[in-house]
Amino acid sequence: MTRRRLYLSVPHMSGLEDDYVAEAFSSNWLSTVGPNLDGFEREMSERLGHGVHALAVSSGTAALHLVLRSLGVSAGDRVAVSTLTFAGSVYPILYLGAVPVFIDSDKASANIDPALVAEYFRDAAKRNALPRALIAVHLYGQHADIDAVAALCEDYGVALVEDAAESLGATYKGRETATTAQMSILSFNGNKMITTTGGGMVIAKDAELIARMRKWANQSREPSVEYLHNEVGYNYRLSNVLAGIGRGQLRVLDDRVTARRAVATRYAEALADIPGVRLQDEAPWGTHSRWLSVLMLDPSELAVGPRELIRDLERDNIESRPVWRPMHTQPLFSDAQSVGGSVAERFYECGLCLPSSSSLTEDDQTRVIGILRTSFMTLAVPR
Ligand SMILES: Cc1ncc(COP(=O)(O)O)c(C=O)c1O
Image 1 (cartoon, rainbow, N blue to C red):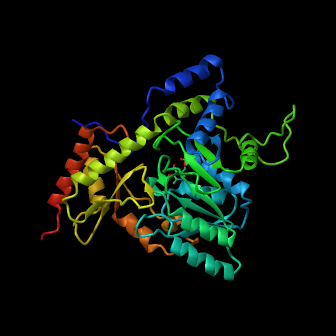
Image 2 (cartoon, rainbow, N blue to C red; image 1 turned 120 degrees about the vertical axis):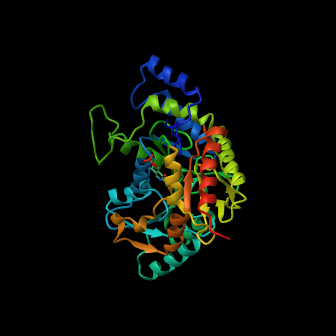
Image 3 (cartoon, rainbow, N blue to C red; image 1 turned 90 degrees about the vertical axis):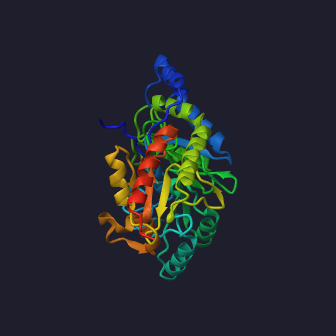
């Protein structure tokens, strides 16, 4: 008999969403305006603090598209971005006809390496080839060392954007993620820390920029009784129904972070005795949201790598995945400039993302750990 499938990261409803959704139905606010949208944006800005404003949209990718356009990114511009990320961090660069420049990870946090950013900016400045913007991704819920990157961006006049799609609930030096740059994006895709089934958000300190992006996201309708358009727009608004789900989810964000962190701790403790296996470290500058628990496998100590473990887990109907394939190794970006590269490639070769849902039970996790331990033991390097 096939055992119940365990997924990497699934939506986790709290029940609080129901009232907001029911209210949208009973009041007939079912489209792209309404009290849930206003409430979701207001409650997210209040939660994040630091005077930020929020714009709810249909996806994190859409949010990043709006942000890059608001920064004036246009055809032929360069935009630097972490190479170790999901394609959604990069596609919006292409939507604007701009060119990505991929930056390698630092060895400790797997996030964009500030030392490489320094090197790249120094060389690019000499060639008059600085990027217009830099997107720092907070990988798997671990914050990048953003102060170091922000100082460099400031020195060289490069706009900094935080891709906090995976890190809602994480902190950096005591501050909430998505508040440490002028502009950030969040994702509420079904697999994220909280979900609206699909959706995203722009977080920005400048209210006027948010207003411009709001107009673009709403088909660039000018405020007139007829439909008047001066510039190109997109249909990127989130619906009031989905924003209701977001409001209920936001109320349990802290519980979701606690649960995912507990999942990560259990993996770390249950596998602590196996040489060459460790959970991705938590950087000293903040708290990890542990959106995904990532195991790092040392090939010099183990005869088994991520691919064998993925196969063994799959046999028991458990989903797991390698770490993101670095963008500079993707066929789509074979011509792109990349700075460094081997650190991200090593994370990709040695990293394994495990089931990490906040609803994962201890019994579910015992099942995952059992398979992992058997694979490690049967395929261990003879000592
Ligand atoms: C790092 C990162 N950036 C951007 C995105 C895009 O978000 P969305 O799926 O909401 O478009 C995702 C996830 O999906 C992501 O993981």
